Image (tube, rainbow, N blue to C red):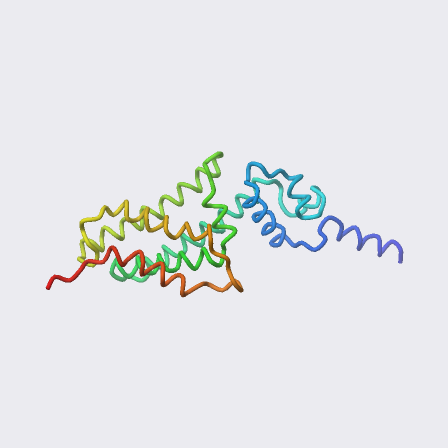
Length: 206
């Protein structure tokens, strides 16, 4: 009986209260508060209330946690672009979907997107993540340019600049938004979409 109890206790040792998902979430929130570079495995251990060796039951390194977090947020944003392109709709419709759905991704995955937006390119991993972000912005610029050619958006605005400003507006949400309940904020998504496109839409000539 003692042997069985000891074995069961040993199998649980190092992972009190945390599965891998929960541990990564706490680590990401810690990175956001203190900065990724400034957060050591020891600091994560103290934040989690478990030993460093217990963390290694779930992940191999701090870098792996960052990689998981960045891939999660980028994959969601890239999914939005892919699904919009699958609509086979006018460029403006695809653009509307990308803008509103990007806001929803941000509001449901706020800690992960926040971490992504605070990258400074200090490692190869971060540089690759920043390149994936740029590719999304470039795709939005292409859609703006196409919508201008379609006559749906005004042509006196540079598409690349408009794309950067649009994504800058969406990204700024991380500085003040506080999610409630974890559901996508559809009202916020609609507000942001209308604000961005309001200044871009072509006016009808009377």
